[in-house]
Length: 428
Image 1: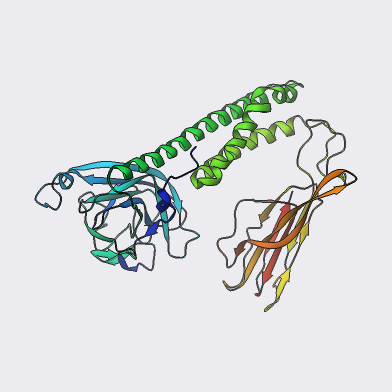
Image 2 (image 1 turned 180 degrees about the vertical axis):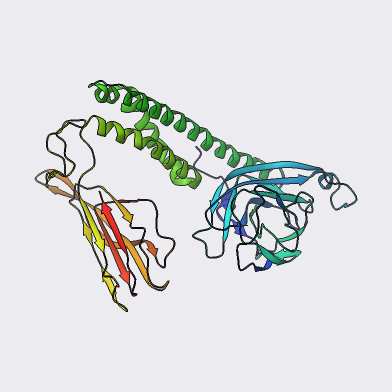
């Protein structure tokens, strides 16, 4: 994986064109047609414009999509000549899912895997196939929109569209792009380098995926075998003692720099955990009791051996008054012993506030590490600098339906104003 962009600094300043629609539908009434294509044609009036994605409308839940960028070959050979018929050539195709549940405007960004340079005066088509539920849509479309950097996008009805999108209404309200200061061969070389790094990222993830799935398959096979030495055999194998931990450690920087890679890596870890948990439970000693006391100094279960359950029994249930007091601020702080390194939070399905102005704020501590010398020994200790707001929840929607995993042993839920109820559960 390359870590430098060699002059492609403009990749970090992606812009969104102004919305080509003057208004957005109040309801989510646009039928996606279960993949029926919505498409629009566009041209640019300046050189050096590079397309990196589009904005799309959404509705409730998850939408599965297929987005394609195509060029009009006739226009490429004869720019500005509308007498030639369209001959579309696909330049880039990307598939995935998106959601607009957290967006107040019902608009979400879709990024291409490979940036597409747009030639001045050449007609391109953006085609969207949406397999989700009904979405919002735009109305009162403008033929031309001018961006803050002087680039103008001109839109026109596309022959590839059969689900209703055209120049005046429909989908694909905005274009995501950047301006490249390089033209000609140099720009192509830089784009090729950036695209090669994207391919390297995909190759790295393919390797990680193959190793994780092999490990998961082996864990499932081990679970089906009744033998007392299974945990020891797995622990001593090179796959689990060396290859798997090293490959997950080295893919960390990739996941940190590429959001899509982060999602995939966490998904792979999530696939692996149930098999590990099942084996832990199967080979826990018969005398193991998950509710038995924990050593307060180390946080470990007493003398259960290598195959003991790795989950501690620290937990706290927080529940507000029902109804909670109006015009007030209530703060709870939950701290576990220092041995706890990760905390999970689970929200009750009934959580909610009476009005959007009321909010539950979730804060985690920001720490600073200190190095001290005591009797010739170097000691590392940390102190809490401040509390950082991680998430804010309000109203009756948008509360997490899955468990949140947080670093550290402390968390502070603070509640502001209101008269409804909220309850959550913390575990380690």
